[in-house]
Length: 201
Length: 248
Image: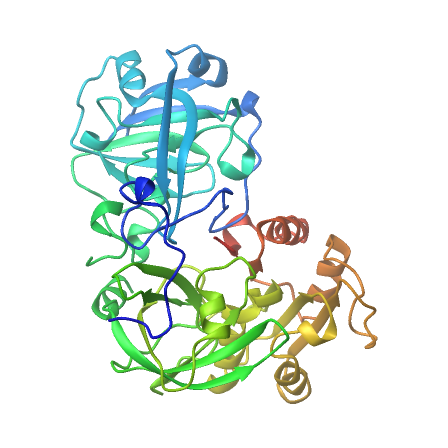
């Protein structure tokens, strides 16, 4: 349905194939959080890998920082409709976390857990094979607290609520168990190119 | 809740039935739903505008009206000078135009419902919109839970829903209102003439008859961070504080 009088701010054609439907470009980096921004001292930081309820391995901040590093420059897409191109991240690939724990494909699904009680679910297939990392740096600097520092999950090909801030663990699950926003009306998978914003999209 | 949201999240066409100027930069748009829904106070809708060549722009707007069986919802939209959608609403949209929207959406930033403990609401500018839905809901439902609202605005003319809030302050039991003006002096003794700070939040919370059980904070990211730190210092648990921050 055409909206009378609306032409919009249409971006150049060379970028339009990088902007999913219903999204618009921003230059800034909006901060959207459901609650208080936690303060986590790296000295107290731990990251725990679980299979079901069972902890398999935990890393301190220094141990985690000693893992192999990965860099990714990606476009990111927030369900609230902003997209940001060419964001540069550095961190530890989920593949390398699994390898360090001696695991390959524990279960088909995972839940990311966070210091603020947030959680989000992502299939293993979207975390492994270089698709996702725990990001520790953004644009060459330690990840700011408001963007999830010390560490956030980065799953750039899904809507950005999947890239959980202040992450402190991955829990592998047999079933696809909805996380915080997935229980509150948002899509179980969240593919921006298919506009999977809300539950039945 | 998930099912209720899923069942109603289809796009629908809505006619603008009324436009009201609220402040120099905020207008309310009253939209007549073609598929009636009953939202929860604090929820939003997604609005979609489509250009003749098929390009579309989507934004989320909080619902200002109280949940009811009415077919009309109110969106209060601030004109962002460099915006794409809000200038359309302010400069082009007219009564009788049709707008596409879907909703109600969002299952977190919600009125606490059956809470018996006082509720502390803190907003800046148009961040009061979802909180206004809660205050109107509290009035319409007769819910006796005490509420205090701290609302920061640039000037007295910029106070969104000012006259209605002043009236509610007089007529609604256990509703306290504190306006904080950042660019001109406040004239009422119960208001403030400065930016939000911890002392202000403690002062407003103390106008409640008991310690707040939860706080809902809506505004810019910087505003929300200051307000949340202040609420935490009142002794509220992080899990009892819900925030909504302006996106892009």
